[in-house]
Amino acid sequence: MNDLPKLNFPPVQLRARRNGAKVEVWDDLRGMYLVLTPEEWVRRHAIAYLCRFCGASPLRIVQEYPVALNGQAQRADIVVVDDHAQPLLVVECKAPSVEISQQTFMQAVRYNSVLNARYIVLTNGLRHFCYETVGEQYRRMDSFPVF
Image (cartoon, rainbow, N blue to C red; front, side):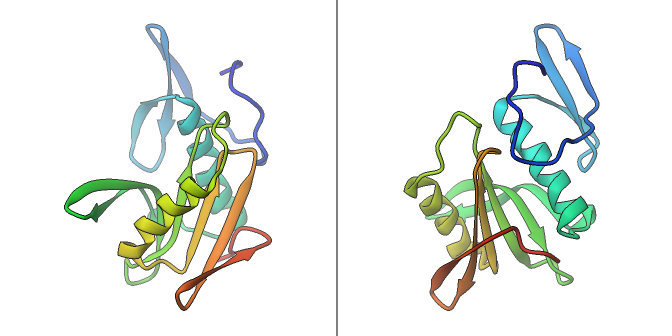
């Protein structure tokens, strides 16, 4: 894990193991080890932040949430659902080396055209962009939403 960059999130405690040439990290929510890719490094930090600092219950966090777009199966990286299991927040995670671009924003907006979540967050672990849905518009927020 030493080759992964320090992210713009508070540090997290991860349980990791080596499996051959790969490093795997324990996913508490799914109860399994996952290959620790740069994007997974960001996802682990984002989930920890949502739970510790935004008040999201781990039971309401769904990873790789299925989204059907034009008959194609897609997956949103992280979705936080509300009391009625309806999407409240969509998080699109990218590897730290990937810039958060208009294309990233449009990807999250496409997912949200199906999910109808109130918030979307874009992060590569170094930069975070948060938006609230206001009617048909997305209003930029200064920080992650608090639940």
